[in-house]
Length: 343
Image (tube, rainbow, N blue to C red; front, side, top):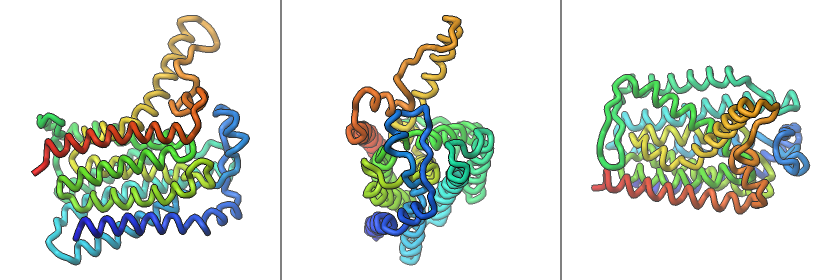
């Protein structure tokens, strides 16, 4: 029953998100909540994407929350459920919603000020740290005090209290990495759909119905959003949507106790953010070495999807290739999970 509830919930999230676009996108146009494109991005982005409605992530956030809540009620009403698992998966969704709300504040400020600068970096970090701390506190109070990390070859490392600050940094990095992946039409939605499918399988192997339900609902919401965000996009998810998805990505990895598998499956996001770090580092070092006002750049532009875009790749090709890479990584994670936890 649990798996069919998750499947139906995913289908409902897809339909609700898709249908929502028919009235929500015109509403965003009416409110003039259009995206302001950075001057430093590819020049054709300014020409073609300026003014396209943003904050479309609200569409799938509402769908995911509603479908998860109804699905959880149905599963719990059948009896024989692990209450701690209900709390764990629900806390993960709440964390994601709070990240999404922070993204909404950022988007709203950008729209009102008509530029691409919302919350300051420090404001974002403080809010994110508070959200992560609240999430871990909820898990701890509920009795989920596991601090050991399991590796694909079966070895476990108990990190004790160090688990919380270290994993806090991982979540902080990964949530922002997902946000950076939302740079071209359809990319974040498609890559995240693949990630959710992988963790639906992993949580299924583990018998964790809460995480399976959450992953399936998020996958359905992403596919529904792709109906409007596939190139050429009619709406952007904004930081509202990408921060929410980043929260779900982390909630699944931590909730399943598969932090290492989360890192493997999320490698596309991780490399997107890492490309920015590498670019800035190389630029600053070469600037000092050559005593010039301009340093050297390793990539044409970062995050790295822009490098491929400037190399002549179409947005559809980038979406397809990045999603294929994510699928290979996700499949590897599922295989590892089966070998580690399969019964």
